[in-house]
Figure 1 (cartoon, rainbow, N blue to C red):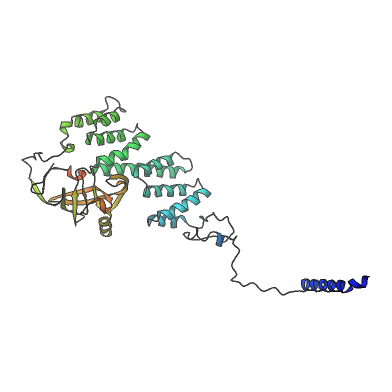
Figure 2 (figure 1 turned 180 degrees about the vertical axis):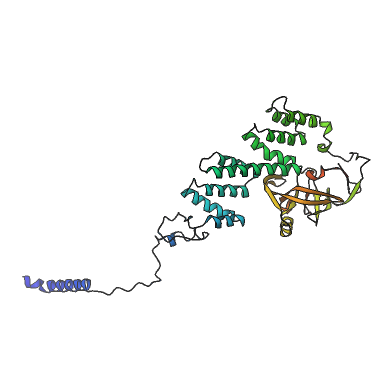
Length: 373
């Protein structure tokens, strides 16, 4: 009976031989092109997006979230900082500090980034925090101490000379909380409060000094009586200007209940909105960019400023010269704000300038009356 299955067995045997021959027959492998893409596990593909901003990138295989920071020299990163590419510097620091969290050079770079992007008081506090670290060599620590003290001193002098008592107080307050035993900080803060008629805060600040402290006694004698503070008193239409002083009348342009006065900043004609409710004078970003093209303008730092639209982080600049009628003012602190906060003007004329005069706003004739102090 087996002969019946012979054809089937023969057919299966032939199929098996044919299949084995196909599988065992040598085949020529195609030669891979040099331009063949690399596997997705290599760094070139895995980090193509995140590393576009870096000067150089490594071709060694690394985890997809790693960034090669060592290939970028710090001098180049500082150039990014000088060019205002703060987001790029921040990304660099995030990865670089992860690799070397105690690097003095990276910590100083981070401090400079904070100085360029955060309020001045925040930046100064960060510098004081760095002084408590032990990663710096003695020369580095000495240089950092000098820089911190210079930064604080220059800011206080600039704000004091600009007669911007509100910004001066806001700058000093966190420094006073950090070190209330610093007599110069204490006296400057107390005077800034006194100039704003905040006498309770003035006394609270002076309480940290000895009762017979000469500086505290001088401030109390100068500003202890509110009636003596004509400079900081509320000014109304009934204010009488000193008769013995020459009187200057400046014509104003009226927009509703607002008044605009012509002035000159760094020899450029500008229109300033009179704002007796603003402690600081301000200009628009557009005017600032124009002035910066032809003048060396120093930025003293960033400050958080309250406006009708909310809190704005604004640079405070030092204007070397400003003309208001026949009067020329020097070293004026001026904030830079968005134009939409200034109506139809190039800026705001605030109390840090107006308080340098005896002034009166004549609404009937649309004039600003000035006599020098």
